[in-house]
Image (tube, rainbow, N blue to C red):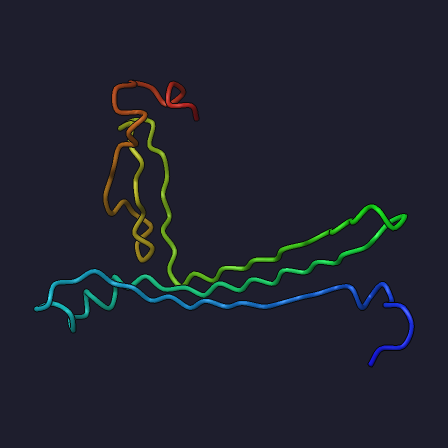
Amino acid sequence: MKLGKDRWYEKISMSYSGKITNSVNASEKNIFSRETLDNMRNGVQHSIPVQASFNVFNYLNITPSVNYTERWYFKKTDRRWNPETNKVETLDPSTDSTASTTTPPRCRSRPTFTECGR
């Protein structure tokens, strides 16, 4: 049983959701190999939405809201643009050297760094 009108802070609502993911692509024969464990993609996501609902002049309903989302990643990939080769290079974190290279689709036919929109 309620007595009196709702206070402004009683109209504020908040919730929380969390998601943990862990995924890997591997063949059946390699499922328990060290390489498969190294290629796992995992992370955590937290989300906290906060909102309130207020009536103004008994006719206008205002509902401000704020959403906070945080993601945790357990692996990092460093990439850099190499204007000499016109490719994006993936750096190996243990040696800080190039591990592999790829050319972005929108830059494949363009010869210079500035023409790729960078």
